[in-house]
Structure formats: structure tokens, C-alpha cells
Length: 145
Image (tube, rainbow, N blue to C red):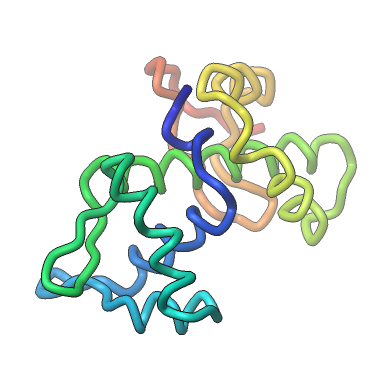
């Protein structure tokens, strides 16, 4: 099972929060993470511990940083979400609804399936909101829909 498929929505939210809060000089504090996630520090810690066990974050002296695997997982999530949005958009959902529909499946869908959906969609360059979609991992060039 891929790392992305092992995550809960709240764990993904914690990863995204850390990615936004950390800087080159310092990691994100538990208090910052908890505040951004609108929960108590002990609850936030409950989401960070499994992320650390998966090798997605590292904690040192009260600060949490993404590992390279954590950054890669966030990029994979972004791709899954945007490809899923594009699929739902092609089925007729308006852009404001594609995001919610994509959130229903983006953590569960495998990389292999996302690549197949991307190919079926003729390698879209962007999601319905105009955000870029990274090219397929198989080396296929991206093309417009």
C-alpha cells in the first residue's frame, strides 16, 4: 500500500500545515500545527506520531519538519487531487463541485489508477481551477485536453 493511501484526511491536513508553516531555518511548532488545524496540541500530536512512524515527518526539539518522503507524498496528493478534479469536471460537474468530489477519492486511489485516469483524460495540463498538473511518471508528455 502506498504512503498516501495509508493517511487519514486529518493526517494529510497535518502534512499540509507543516509544509506551509516550516521554513528553511526552522520547523513548525506543535502549537502552530494545532492552531492551524483548530485542535488542541495533544490532538495534533496524535496525528503527527503516525506521520513520523511512516517517515513523512521528523521532530526535533519541539519542531516538526517534512522529510523528503513527506514532501514527495504531498506532491503525489496534489497530483491525485487535481487529476480527480479533472475527471469529475469532464463528467460535467462545475469547478466549484469538482474539489469536493475529488476529496472523496483522492486518498484512496492508487498511483497506477491515477496514471490511467490521466492518460484517459489525455494528460491535462491543469485542473478545473487552473492549477498545474505534474506530468505522468511514465514519461508521457502532457497535452491539452
